Amino acid sequence: CKDKKELEEFWNVSEIQWIENVYGIIKQLIEKWKSIQEKIKNNQLLIQNKQLEQKAQDEKHKQSKQHLLEQQKEIENQINEIDTHLKTFEQSIEQQAIFSCEKIQTNCPFIKIINKKTFDQLEEQKQTFITRKITLNESLQKKIDEITILNQQKEQKNKEEKNKKKNK
Image 1 (tube, rainbow, N blue to C red):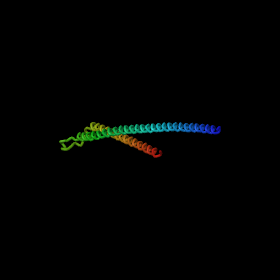
Image 2 (image 1 turned 180 degrees about the vertical axis):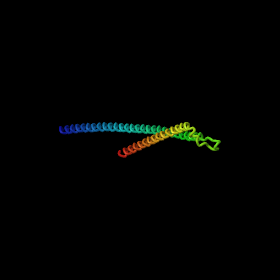
Image 3 (image 1 turned 135 degrees about the vertical axis):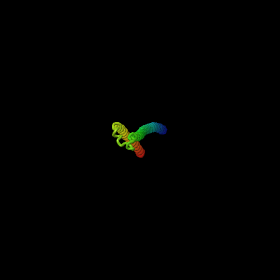
Image 4 (image 1 turned 30 degrees about the vertical axis):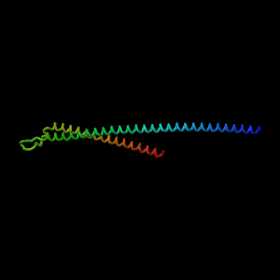
């Protein structure tokens, strides 16, 4: 009878140890699950941050490009105004150079020589417009180059993002 009691006590102790072991394993699994959930939450926040950063970069790119396009359009308008003004100015010079001479019954070929100072001043003004047009064309080319570079940078970032996604 004594052996039977000892055997029952042994099994009771073994069951208690087994229950304690199972309880310990369950606690570890619960802690592991919490840890995994926390990592998932952190990863989701990282993804959201990356998306927000990308959105901010896209918006910055969009605004920069829009600003450059507006500047480009303004320069183009100024060039067109100068072209129009130059044509009008040249027509005005031509009209001023025409003087009908009754004695030779045709236009006087010497009017530009006679009014040399006036025509020299008009030519200087014309050259000022031409110089301004050249400067604006250079500025326009710079804006076009900046837009091209901006687009290339955007394309490069897009390629890098695609490569990152592929590598994951």
